[in-house]
Image (cartoon, rainbow, N blue to C red; front, top):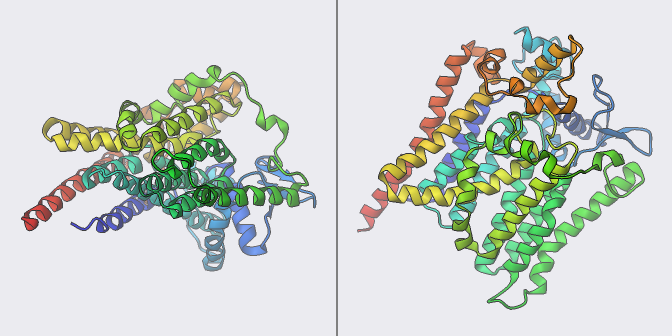
Amino acid sequence: MRIRRIPLGLFASVLGAYALSAYWGIRSVDGEVLYRTAESLALEGDFSITPVELWPEFGVAQGRDGQAYSKYGPALPLIAAPVAWLATHVTPTEGVNWPGPSFWISGGLGALNARRPPPDGAAHFRRGLVSAVNLLLSALAVLALWSLLIRLQVQPGAANLTAILFAFGTPLFAYSSTFLAEPLLTLCVLRCCDGLIEAHRTKRARHLFASGLWLALALVTHITAFLWVPFLAMSSWIAASQDGRRPRSAALAGFALPVVIAVAGLVVFDLVRFGHAFGAGRPVEDFEFGAPWVNLGPVLWSWGKGLFVFCPALIASLAAWPLLVRCIGPMAWILLSGVAARILLFSSFHDWHGGLGPGPRYLLPEIGLLMVPAGLLLGRWLRRGGAFCAAAIGLACLCILQQTWLVIGELFSWCDYWSRFFQARGGDVLMEDALYLDRLFSPWQIGYLLHNTGPATLRALQLGAGTAYLLWGFTLCSIAVGAVVFTSRAQRAAQTRSR
């Protein structure tokens, strides 16, 4: 069996399933700010934007020229700008009945709740097309994980199963249907670690350089990527070392050069826009931190944002971390230290929850990295066969069914419903983060599934929530089982031919 055939089938299957599961619109105000930046780049060649009318102070800061600029990293808008240009030029001028109303323009949320088309279909059409960029980036992140597992000599069947588990059994599934930067950041972190592991194995400087490029892109994508720099830099030192000797300075320079250029570019970018070098126009209050143990519990276990609640497969991943240590040595402990440090730092952050979103938004890259030891564990179970093989496939299917529940419902309108419900009675669900902590508001109840349907295709088919969940859950679980069966049969056929 030729391994290179697997990524194409895997990529096509994941991307197709993402497209059928997508909302095809922009539902978060963060995503609206990023979209407006991409549109401004496409049409005006400028980063300045018009603030979101329903929340004009959100996500923007006033520049030196008096214009409003996004506080977010420029990478995603730069990548999406060509799609925004295309969407502007192919959008019909009238008669557009777009199934995915965006929430922050032209009564989009009201249109979804009323089950009717939005009033300005052209604007929603453009946003729906641009949001498809994240479908592609999320599928590429899945492919990056598969490549990393193959690099660690995980058998193809286990690599396929783990990649599908990551694609449909973690919050990446839900985030693929947003226009947020986390899927791109996840892709960058996985590709960076892939390059470091390959450099450690082959001792070739070009892999360190490629790893540095991906880290540089991560820094331009999201400000929180800076938290990974010291840990990935230490990993690059190990990767560049040869037989315990001092690493080659040329190899380390290859890793550091793209990172230095990215940091210098961000400094100039902020100087030009805001007149100061750091912070992307953010006020000091945006960087307030407290004791990490206050929010550590909610970050890990809360109903609305808990890492292990939204991704229980990570419990098995952490237990399997020693398997990764056997493969890459001390680098595995450095990467785990990076994961732990980021969890503690986000726990001490005043915005620990990351706002509205499906699960632990800031920790999506960590979920991708923690899937690596899960792949090693699943590979060991599949090799044993019998009950262990059934357990591996069963674990993947249970996680897929959980995330399918999250995707079939519509989280953003669900949270807005409860916010308005309590506002009408003089309450505020955002006080003391009740929206993310109280079980009443969590998506893990039947009312969430019945409130609104997320995927545009399922809304167009007018399927009931229960029917849609069972149909799509069965389909995705079938993909997971089929990937293992197909790979196993192909391997046996290859072994038979070689005899």
